[in-house]
Length: 301
Image (cartoon, rainbow, N blue to C red):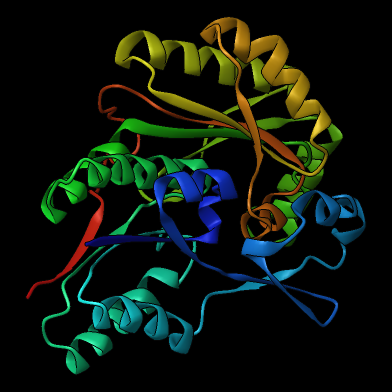
């Protein structure tokens, strides 16, 4: 049997994990001396205090080697095969730890078979490939076919988001102090996406309203060119603006209800309050990998 494992940064709700039979290894959020298990946090309760955290931004940590090896050893000992799809190595060291853990387990259980994929993204841009692989696995396909489904899903998905303020990005070292100060003073609102595994600017607008409109325009264009398979609206901080945006701007375009899902705090605390959209198209898009391709690590029987 193929066991699919991902991490908590994919932000997949519990009902979708159960339906797809996907297992999660959690990252951790550390704030004021308290370690929170990302996968089991009350995210909305945590985000309620996000504005008070700007001068004391929480840190994050990846799963320990022990936790990863324990998970993979259980799968190997049962005679199952592992397909792991994880947060971008450009955003976290998790993938390197996962690869080390899988190789260590294989040294102990030589017939352990695994395939590990660097999603080169996070949030539902990471989740859509996971869920696509789970659907293919459910139909009884091989590991290689599940891998190909996940890789195709990675190349078919996109994440667009805009932060409410540049302060969190500046505090986290993503932009300079002067750039954040100027941007906040004149109300610059960037539209960010993920390219080659890292957050990258798509556009900079003079207001958040214009930034959200640009996201809608990019989304509409992608759907026209590549079709639409799945989508979710993401938020960091207060859920209400994301719900309103989803109902007023996105649902009229797609003519169906849209799920509104919080981004993992592991990512959210680096960005600050934000709204975005992660969607999976019917066909592959050229946007995400102008300079590289998704990474894959195999361990065969």
